[in-house]
Length: 513
Image (tube, rainbow, N blue to C red):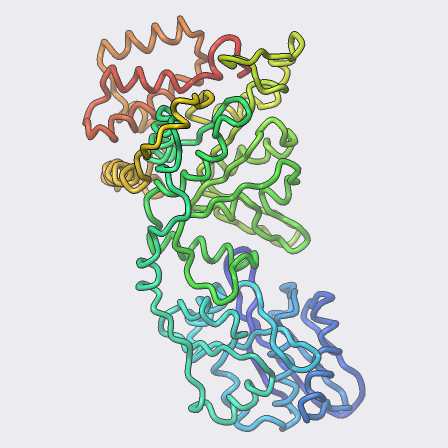
């Protein structure tokens, strides 16, 4: 007897529905065809044990499982459950097997029939709704995640017996109910960290406010213990809240990567990813035998923080250059090319030299001649060209540390950032894919960042006196436009340019560029 069940395979951040045809007929053997990987081929032992352990029988005649489309590689243990249900349906052990066609079923089986969580439940649910299925059956741990999709009945199950009982009497089961919007908006502004905890460092807070307002990449340069990491970790608290569309994109990526916690719903805060400097290039940008999103994609719509930037391998840093420009990364294989979104803000930190005390106001640098230049040259010019703000972080004095008064709260800074982003949203409403000043094209730069004669004179003098490189010119204009937006000024004024110029430390003579 031939029975069809339906599952789903995740490719990139999208899903493709898979038809699982199970035929039980005369003969001997268990065959799985349709480009299954090792995990699917091993499913026979898990399925056999789960079926027997729950009082059903595993047919001892020929079983052929075909996974269509047959030319697409299938991977992972999440196909255990639809194959097991197909075998039970084909051997007349399930009542109302005709209703199998209305549901997508996914789950990994334990030997006793318990159902384990899967990856990618959200894109699977989105695809099931698009294909017009009546419902989706997934492990209970993934039910809230899949339940975010409207107009699709999602059932969370914990055991093989529950699935069999479901098809015998669907009405006795209640689909999961998730109020996505209410949960999303209620916890958007709940942060463990806050800028009010930071003592002093007003100039660094200002630089990060500018970075947040314009979507600019930034690098913090300073001695150990100056507060670079502490400041960077608080940046997400001043970024504009995620929109529902951005939250859905971000959640899909984390779902595919298996990074969502159990019973999670929509991600409601901008991600902050901080990989260790020993990370490989594949782990950073994504890839692998079965391509998975890397750290730059997990930071999509959020912040990627690279602490101790010169300690990262040069090859790792160089692979980021193209994704930073295109805001996506393409992983190509012989038979498939997958796109992962990678629209992130890069925040990096570094010591000014190997010992960490070059230009320190109190401690003396012990590095030998040439060591500072060599250390800074670990960061390539093309990568540095994509970083708009170079911010020097100085140690906090005892007077500031012992001050009991609190600094400005993140909520106040965030309000100014949101107002500046609203100005930019209006400015770029006719340009799809551009939403912040950092993403301005060269043509837009000439049209939007117009400066007067006094501004031109200041910029010319700065480039000559400070020996700024040619690449600093565009960056200064973009940053000055953001500073003007924060001040609600329609024009870029001399004071906006002057502030932007000071954020190009590494372009000055004496620094590596």
